[in-house]
Length: 109
Image (tube, rainbow, N blue to C red; front, side, top):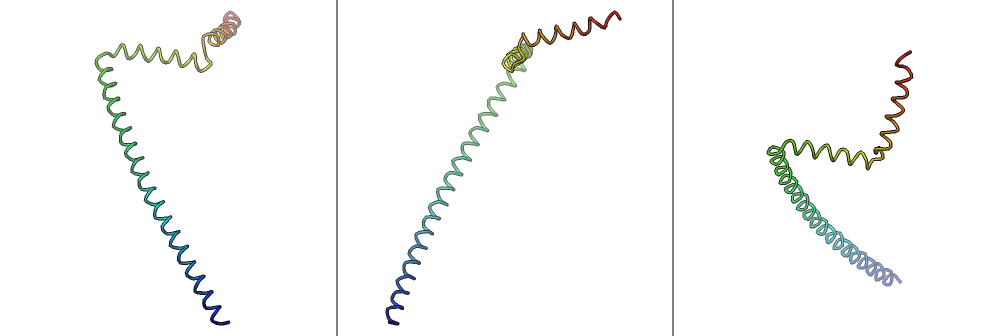
């Protein structure tokens, strides 16, 4: 009976060691994959950073050569963003009309 208990205990210990080995191998594989992913992400960030600096250099050069074109483009973009944000021409006219009515009623009092 004692011999059976020892054999069972040895078998359980062996199974536990094998399971621990599999778990350690899995953790190691996950760590390697995590390191690869981290390197790929870092490479992507560096590429994006390089491209952003290249584009900004181009934009700065263009603005330096054509400053009034840059001002006109900025005004046009502001107008477009204003229209798209819901503060379009109709909203502006309505607000402008009400402000004149308020002002007109108090101007000559």
